[in-house]
Amino acid sequence: MNVIVKSEHFQPFQVITMDVDSLIPDQHTEKLKCIACNNYLSHFPIYISGGKHNICSRCYNSLSEKSNYVQNEAYESLAQFIHFSCRYKSEGCLEKLLPADIPQHEKNCSYRIIKCPTAEFTKCTWEGPMPHSLHHCQDKHFNIMLENGEFVVNLSSSYQCTNLLECDSTLFIVTRKFYAINKCLEFSISNIESETNRRFCCEITFKSSNKNLVITCEGREVTEIFLDSLKDQDKESTVVVAKVCVEKTNQAIPTIDETINHEFLAQFKCAVCGDYSMPPIYQDLNQPIGRQIKCSECRDKYFKFNIFGGNPNSKEMRNINLDKIANLLNFPCKYKENGCSVLAKPEQMQSHQLFCLYGKHNCPVMEYVDCKWNGFGKDVIAHIEESHQIMTLTNSTEISENISKILDDFNCCKLPNPAVHSINCYIFRFSNLLFRLNFVVVGQNFYWIVQPIGQLQGKYMYELELIDKTNAGQKVILRQPCATLKEKNNLLEQNNCYLQKNQIKSFIADDQIITFKITIFK
Ligand SMILES: [Zn+2]
Ligand SMILES: [Zn+2]
Ligand SMILES: [Zn+2]
Ligand SMILES: [Zn+2]
Ligand SMILES: [Zn+2]
Ligand SMILES: [Zn+2]
Image 1 (cartoon, rainbow, N blue to C red):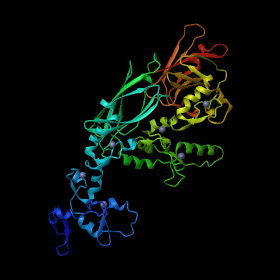
Image 2 (image 1 turned 180 degrees about the vertical axis):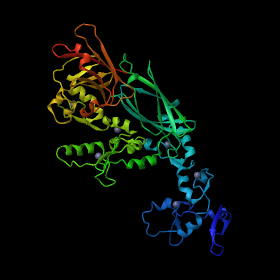
Image 3 (image 1 turned 135 degrees about the horizontal axis):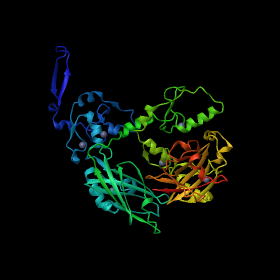
């Protein structure tokens, strides 16, 4: 190792070099050890007390009494040029590094001493070098190893468990939570070297007696997998067999580094409530910098206030560039504190939060019927079954509506207005899921909007069929994908089946009754 030393005794800019490592034989660096942990004094800053007792910063930070210690800058200015052995030398690490590189290396050293990877859920107290952890787990925790990566899910019972999985001599921790109520499996897999930025993917194959489902998920993220489609309709209970396959990818998956993600996320905090703001993001230029971003809920409150006589001089501006950055980031669910561990890009997160099982939500039909229910996402289905049976229909039921109660302009729904009652609302059951149908007539336009209550995996479609009661043999069929559940004000924003009155007037009977059928399918 060569050090450049500038000296005033020489010509300006002339330098001499010396090899510090060769000046300090190994047996001397052996003496440069911390009195507390006996590791090398290579983890800066180094502190000294009483003029001779040096301790490293690994130990200093946990000292209760720090007042006797001062930073040993004289030592540091010399020792910064010495290559020290890694503290895990006796475990097998052969690296020699400068103090500047020591903290990062020791944190990720593949020989470092770790706690048993299962410590959190088995309370095992084993500690040892990382290369021994696989052997330890095979020996002591074989009972929670997923053999060949296989596990079973009984679709009629909820459960939660954590397992180990060995793949090419690497240990993974597999965590599963299954909710029988909506057949949702929360799956996550992480490797115990999680600080090293090695990315991996895994593929899970689910099999029931007659169907297959293959899901890929990225390591360390929680993936929600809906197993409803695997249900065997003929049987009381269905047991699904799953197999996990880990693929280590050499290419980095294009995701934002976790620390950068975290730093960027901070820029999207709502100045009012502290929740994250997701696209569309607006900036309030009347506010000082740092307080310009509001989440949609706080914005809504602010604007409601405005409508009823608040400050009309708002300088609000949509910020498309912030939207673009936000769309690259993974946002935590706002119900994280209640136990939700889902991380997702804004669009998925917004629809997730609408019916996060850990969040409290209003009744999904509260804008159409008088219902004050507010409860956890996991209880929504039970609530609907209990309180809204009367508006719940089975798939493909024929519905007849009187269209004489016509809305002139859909905008009138945006203010408290008795006319909103003329938006019809039904709930459909399809397999184990619930969907809301809204039928709206606005002027000459007819809309049928079907949106899922809760979260969906995969695409669901709905088909509208107008029924010809005159027996003239006419047929109108439209199909659209089901979009996400929207509030009444935004009902018409997304896909919907839409027809104009003159296209369908022959379907409307003299008594102003129109009859139709909605079929949801996958
Ligand atoms: Zn120490
Ligand atoms: Zn090392
Ligand atoms: Zn253990
Ligand atoms: Zn807010
Ligand atoms: Zn959530
Ligand atoms: Zn309700």
